[in-house]
Length: 244
Image 1 (cartoon, rainbow, N blue to C red):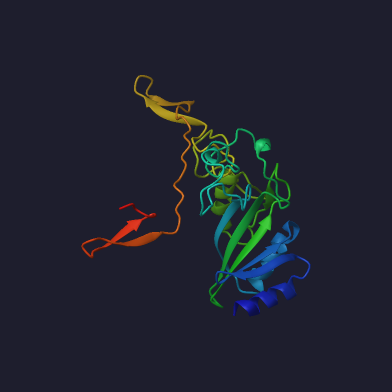
Image 2 (tube, rainbow, N blue to C red):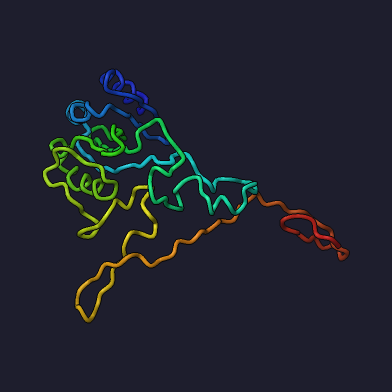
């Protein structure tokens, strides 16, 4: 069924569709940003995807890079935690310091569509052309449920949805600086807040948490050696050979 849907969609959107693949029992198509509204209208009216059940932003900064992914001891040792390759666990003060570059745009928006009539789901992705000002067209006029989803992606990723009727933050506090789901956002945050009983109001102060470097243990495949004891008991020695 997914293969048939993939063929129908690629035949219908030959110019607009950049990629279409089936993975993990799910069909994902990627389209050009300029064709977003027209493609979504056709998916709703011609293919029966009457519901937008979710929308989320994606930050592909350092995508595919992971300083901790290893099954053997690292030759770099502890330094890979102190001087990380990516910002997955540690944050850089400036995006320009990031050493990893990708050909694809950094930000994207992913839409999850549902067809109750045909009992089908579709994952739609569109990439933002400008990394400095990520923006796509709003789909509120196509699916009303996109309203709060787009506000959430704007709040957490800083993606602007052009034409949105009320694009403002929805989760973070008033006056919040930055977008917390971006990969270069400091994990300890920018500021911290506390209630002052004397002034009887909430105060914002510079964050007092000191960043820590946590180097996880390298988990290798269990290596056990069976050793026969003098009493004919079998002793399992984990991790290697034990001298008698």
